[in-house]
Length: 312
Image (cartoon, rainbow, N blue to C red; front, side, top):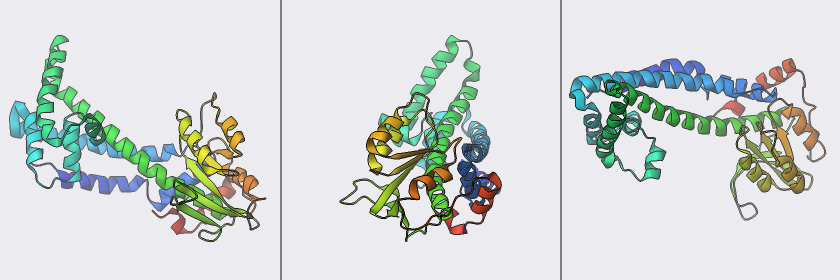
């Protein structure tokens, strides 16, 4: 069966490039948003919604073709056809999971192998069919199935984008701050330090100080995940820094940070560049540049940073 893979890839290449979350331009924009204390997610969301829109259209085309090719039994037949392909593309692999209303991670957690998918889909058809008969909407089975597949695709794409963009942006954000303050990578600060005999977990950044190094962690976490920030506080050590997006009003992370003598710097609605400067100015081995505070000056300084800071 034709899966329109090349068409789908062309759509992605020709359109996502306009809002590529990993381009230098996008990374600069997001760094500026964060240094201004604004919501960087507004930029990444354009990229994600573009991918989702094109994916929904691709799913519609594939399903319509499956109906024309296999008839009313298109769901099970499509799963069997996908399973028969020896070297599936990443798109076809995703499609097989989505057809069963799953993501790959969910499938692993449920202990479902790809060879089980035809059986899983047959059982799911029976279950959903009974449900729709009960509410007298059986004729809407295919519409409901498409929406279920779109829901799985949404979880897959959003989860992937969040992980990739978040980790990349954390590095860009730290490099931007420390470079603007006058520190040099591999001389005054180091990125992505592997665990060793002294520290048993990876560290986002380490900064040279008069008495050694301090650790820096970034957690681009919104208000519902304060336990992630708690974990980072426990990892950075005395005078370490944890930069985070924002947390809820009832959080107790500040009390935890005080006990561990860790500096917390909220990004949203704050001046993270100034906060970092105030914390580091009496610790580092070099005289720091005074940070810009006006929006126009911050934008100009970020735009003047070298390209390599924003390269993936």
